[in-house]
Length: 275
Image 1 (cartoon, rainbow, N blue to C red):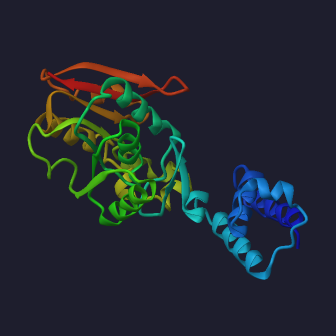
Image 2 (cartoon, rainbow, N blue to C red; image 1 turned 60 degrees about the vertical axis):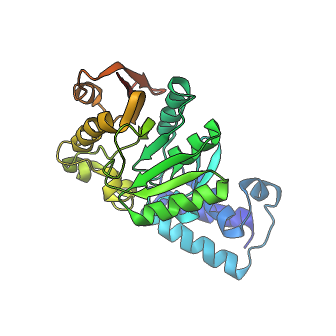
């Protein structure tokens, strides 16, 4: 079977299984099976798949039809122009989270002590360490997530120190200039309505923020006032329709409270500075 025929069959299987963007998904999975990039498929449509290539492609298609996200099949996801390794132990980085990076670089470009709380794949910590040209810290309650993040830091040559910690519990008072986070913010009752790729595959500890979805925000805001140095920034990604309720959690010890919308105009990032 050649590439062109394999793609046609893959697209048909994915369409029948109601998988979104079936053509693109088939191309990504076939390129992964061939250990090539997608451009190779266009230039070599007559390439005859070996038996092992066909077996890999068939397995990848089957996994995707069962709901496994493409990023977990290929173990890759691009974030801020860099390729990160992802596994089911970590949340798949979203493009919206890049707004956290942009906000941090705009508000605190000279921050000398930077911490990513709930680091997951390490996308925020690694990116900020490389963009700022200085070391960063990353914490997570999951040891398996920290292992993935550490691998990404090594592969991308980023200077990041990793700490197993429940949010900020392991960090001293007035020890950080900048804290960033994409915390769990999905309410538990929303689980049935999530896409199966999210609900059944991504780690629950990185998704659900408690009954209201605000519980992690409340803990993070309160303890950030302890860990931040005077003038330090807390920058967090926001869940849908949470900006007002999260903003109300800040005390009079914080100022310059502001939100940043995403490309759809939805408040996506909230930042505040310790007085």
